[in-house]
Length: 249
Image (cartoon, rainbow, N blue to C red; front, side, top):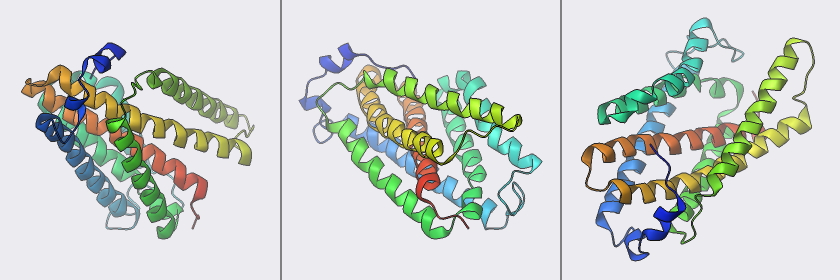
């Protein structure tokens, strides 16, 4: 799914970018949000099943540490994203990829029910949902072109991942970087970065609609991949908020 640029945003009349006016855009965005909601429900059900339900103990032990199968399930989404993007160019491939990823990520999230009390999990998800609603609405309704945010958000994300990787390597030699202050800063940065992505991706999807409207295959792919982008934003913000403010069991 290709990014749009500033010229695309400027070429779209303001009245056409109003969901209440353009029925096609409204239908497209509702399709994205509906698939997103169903994906979150699937992930939540599988997280409960592997954390507290009938599959508890299959992917992780009582302390939330991965079993061998748990490591496979946890790492599989990364492999699918890195090596399976070619399949996402077709409507069926994109749909299969979306549902497979939401299922695997959901199953791997069972640890949150082991590591945190239910109140913290619910509060973190509610805060994430409220933030998503506000930021996605901003991304949809703003008249400002925020496509330039993408570069800065991506650079910030790479920086956070880099610090985490360095910390993991150093921990192998007995050097611990992830102290209280750094832990807080990194998770706060993750919250801010994915907050930006929520607005950015929503506007990107809206503008993309005008590029592909009328192409049923491209619209289907964009619905699945757009839902995946927003899903990943929500999951990453949720985990960061839980790490920052959750009460551990």
